[in-house]
Image (cartoon, rainbow, N blue to C red; front, side):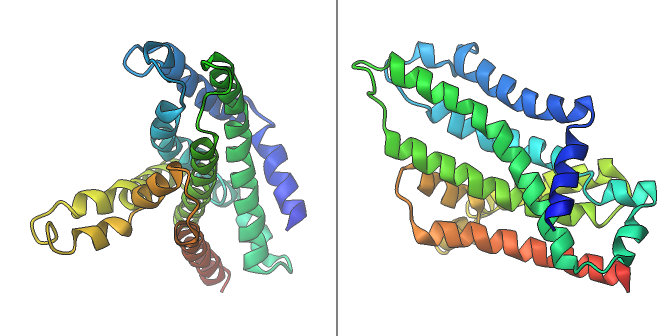
Length: 243
């Protein structure tokens, strides 16, 4: 599994696309936080990273499928998928290696944003006047959200040889699980009745809860369950193709 993990990391950064994906994440968030007047921190009278954590999930919706779309689709396209399947490796080892590599790449993209926290920390009046608990909770939420999106992206990558189709399918599924239940809760059959229950089925509800700085075990279990469910589907898809 670890050999596959290292292979995936090396493969991602062996061409300019890898650097473009991670660099664009930091650049987009930087422009939103410091340049665009509607979101710029400099336009507000308090020190916080609310804008970053409200925009980051939307950026992840496109960034993570771009990272995971090649995981299995490229193997099928290049003809190396059959070679991978004939090796004495359990499907869960393959899935685990690729999942951890994808998640590690997302964390690499997320790591440089710590400089934004340091900048806000220094700009606060007095210095350090920032809600560290909310920032920590938001970062934990983003990490678990990235894990869920990575698992979804890996699953869609096993369904087709086309990386574009895998990307679009992953974006659609990630959007559905993040925003879909929120909008479904507003529909007449649920509104005012079971809307709270329906909304809790979506990622947005649990991510927002973590962003408040309260680390609730139920939120973490929810994201872990989503990730495990789609990793299970991925392993089953691989097992079916191997058979």
